[in-house]
Image (cartoon, rainbow, N blue to C red; front, side, top):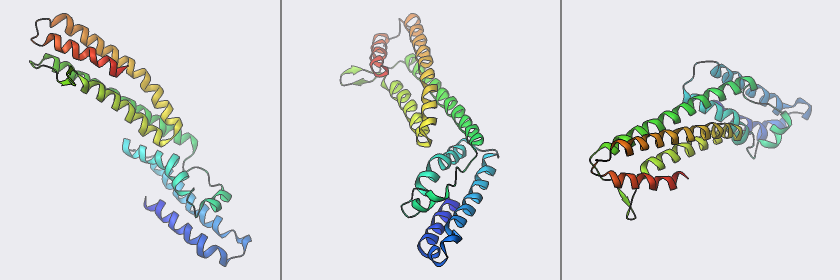
Amino acid sequence: LHMGKTMKEDLTVVVKYIKQLYPPEFNVFSTYAELYHNYFASQAKKNAESHLEDKDIYLLLSWVHNIYPKDMRKDHVLAEELEKVKLGSLLPSSLSKELEKKYLDSEEATIKNSLSKCLDKEIQRWKEDKEPEKLNGHFQSELLAIFVIQSIYSGQKRAKDISTAVGEELSRRLWQELPAFLRSYKDAFEDFKEKSKKHRHYKPILIANVNNCWNFR
């Protein structure tokens, strides 16, 4: 963040005050821009090759795909000059792809794990001596559907905020996870129906879960 802010502020000063003090053939802005970019890219590469936590990978990818090319290089003061310089990406394509894969693997595993834990909690609720909550007069087991849908949606949105391609790849993976989760949910529910017929709130729990189907559809 400090490097990005410094680069943006300094290049703005070059455009507004320094560039016109030199003959055009000196390419003063290009010189400054290339030096800043090369240093920034070298630091990004150094970070990318070190051990990064998931949140650091996300931040670095956001810089590579989003913040650097869009917020910085499309800045209204700098855009025209930077367009002439053709600086390229902050990271080599191969390294960027490697980070994207790490991010996607981690995000997929995190969402899959959270869905599994949520289902475990839901199954535990069925075993409690408690009637399901009502919404608009109807039994609902709505927390499960809301949590699952929000988890998938927010995961897709985070990935899309990095880049369209990363968002599409995570969506593709999650649309494979969702049917797997729904199968687990169905199996658990079938098991409850068979084994818990003497449960005091058996019928309301069945109704609540049937009402869940609409949300999942």
